[in-house]
Amino acid sequence: MTLTEPDGVTTKINEPGPELSLDEQEALIGLLLDRSRGASWVVLAGSLPPGVPADFYATVARRLRSTHDGDAPLIAIDSSGAPLAAAISGDSNGISGKPDLLKPNAEELAELAAAAGLTDVHTADELEADPGLAARAAAAVVASGVGAVLATLGSKGAVLVTADGAWFATHPPIQAVSTVGAGDSSLAGYLLAATNGGTSQDCLRQAVAHGAAAASLPGSTVPAVHQTTPDAVTITALQKD
Image (cartoon, rainbow, N blue to C red):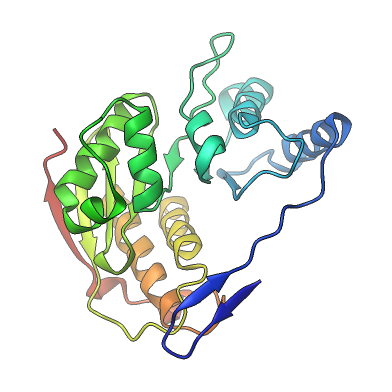
């Protein structure tokens, strides 16, 4: 449940989901393997239910790649805590469990950077205040084998780092109504642009536009494309080293 106050302050009350047995986990993976045939992307998002190991998302990524072989969909992961840390863990039997895209917020990026060995990043506030530092943190994660990192920095914008470059995007200030789902919408905007053949900068631009639009809408409303303003987004190239 999410409680949203008139000024946009939100309070989330999250309860654990039902425990999933090993058989139920396997059935879930089997269903995903079947439904994902021909897909461009698979998104693995959220916390994990009780009984599910922390490396579940990495396991799913490996199963997708081994089952679909050269025709596997790209994989995006948006999680936190142990499942997020496990997502950048090592390979198994020569098959990578690391995602093609990670979508952390500032707090999660700080955790990832520490896991990747970048020890001079300490807080989410530091990353939100300094996009260059955020890019360096994300670059450490990319260097560990992740395809790209889209780090959302709240009202400050977002940073995208790939093997080819790093960019910082901002949107003009909006009247925040509810921030619930803004990060999810940013990921949706990125994937929408990616599936339409957009460049890295196009994907970042639409991600920030989607996130800003979501924050300006009540509750957990997901914005339609016509409600976003990608032309208002400013993108700046960053040094990632």
